[in-house]
Image (cartoon, rainbow, N blue to C red; front, top):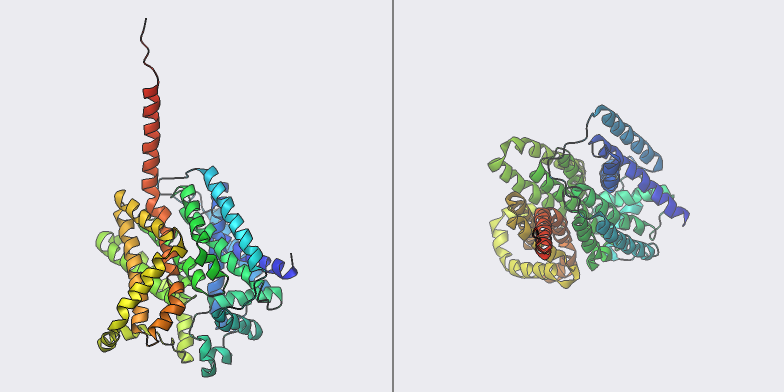
Length: 476
């Protein structure tokens, strides 16, 4: 193993410690079993928190490297341990525990680990050659490493508009931190950081749903997601679409769990993941809004006592994005061709109305294509299972988020002035990733109750058959 790989892993180990402090502070690791189950969630949170700080400090002329990461990890752990010492009992669990088959989950997890190990071997020797991967995200990461901040001409001069200067900085800022840890720019080794996004996603989804959904069902969905060819294929291109999908999916799952179970720790976790999503790509704001708005409407009608907490969470997500928006405004960086304010102009919408039908058809074709494997059928089965089990709130939330997210994607192409065939051909296959991965990530939660009831029914049927097979005995 090379020195660069070891240093990159060290940086990620420190990010794990950052997240572990968050998990301890939230009271999610008060037993050894909870600690083990939520170690993956700690890594996902650490990666998201570090990415948010990296992107924010980059515009404040502060560069984060190994020393700063170590201080951040130490501070987070101290706060977490202090909060843990003040807590007399573990966080209350309002949902009925459902652990499922641990042995089966471990077997599926081993297959997933093997898949990631094979991918790691390929990623470690893959050069940075995909166009946007090096021309946009890679160039920004190297500039942040070379100059230490986003205040140089590459990010502010009109001469560099081709690198999409208005795109948020979470992905290149995290990669720049890795370069500082390694002491050099390495376009091949950095692919391992991309693969670690998949590791963080898998561990975080399990940690979010642990004891709420059967472990084997969570493991199956994680394997289905990571085995879908576009996921690891696109992730290795150094495009930001799959990292965006991972962050938004985890935030949406946390919101869905909070809606269902009202456990207090879920809302700050949702804020962290959604906040990381909005700082990954501009579409992240649309996906986050598609989750927060219907949830707000539902609570306003059914559970007003939680409305203020959700509004505070939405405000926190917006606050994470505000420094970047101030930076782009001060430097007159436009959002390129896509301006959602165009949706407020009826004349433009009318003039572009012919773009809607082909856009819908193209997106449906991409979502329903065979490349995504079982993810779309899994999502459909999850929604159906939640509906049959009487989980109306979960069903409504999932359908509302999927519908609004799809409508938002259609709107992006509708209001654009780019040639539609070219635009769809170069982006539709990527832009649907958040929708597909987010829906599949909700499946274990959606199907948990129906899964449990079916196992009870099967167990009862076996017992009934067993009694019927035994011969009756009569006294002599």
